[in-house]
Image (tube, rainbow, N blue to C red; front, side, top):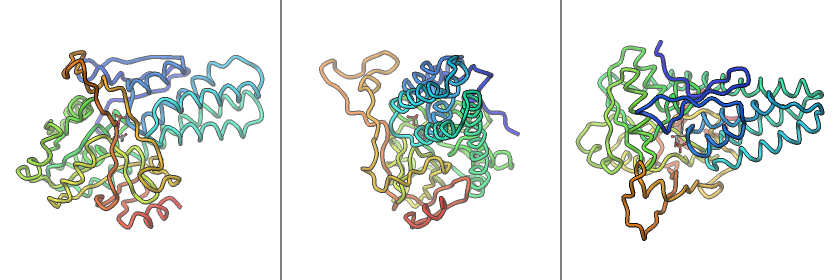
Length: 345
Ligand code: MRU
């Protein structure tokens, strides 16, 4: 079995996470007992990736529960609701974060004593992580059937082990295909400005012994013409009821180019990334981050002082451009307005 990095771990009241800002130069861990510090790690993208921030959100609540030293259930629930609101304010687009917070909160509300409430919050957070790891593996097993020996696969951002509880989503089929002895290569689009592809996907695939190449985001067109790409697999931060996919900047362009060049374009995501309350692309917030992330590279300013940047952190891929969605419950195809509600029923 492949050994992959553990992005985030619960260790009896302490959370240990990889500081993804330091990769690939340094593998540095953050250890904290403070839910606010963990919430800040989500906001500052020391941990990122939809399922991983869902787990981190749940672990923030678990840290609060573990270290709470009051003695009334009422004050515990009141403060937990505050923690939940603060955590929800960290990043707006990945629905997994909201899903995880609400799930933990609703379990806590069903308890009748302070001891039970603290235990349930921690158990639920750990369950979210375990289920995510199982979902990653299932996605990998289902998606690996799409990979043939000798294939070239393209991906964007990091929907890998670092972004989830273990196998990743877009990378899970690659890891399982590797375990099954298939040979293939992966092109990781670098993913400006945070460089999740160049720094994180390339790092974790290389660690696992997968043949990986980094390419600039603006090379998608020529790559599709010259490099015989067989398959595109990407992750998702939120998938609406009708199949609109919010994912990292560049995903929509990859989907467009894939359509023109007949490259099958798959989205790999656990069911916790679906949002049945959102129908179209305007029903939720697309995160806009600080322009300085675009204007500076490693502290060096690359644009004139007098200009600013337009920086959407995600884009939206319309359902018509998606060949299929790989989930832990199965692989679904269009029409998504029918297959998604059926999958989640
Ligand atoms: O801004 P990020 O790095 O959190 O964005 C991550 C992505 O867009 C991933 O593709 C998505 O969250 C899926 S992770 C399995």
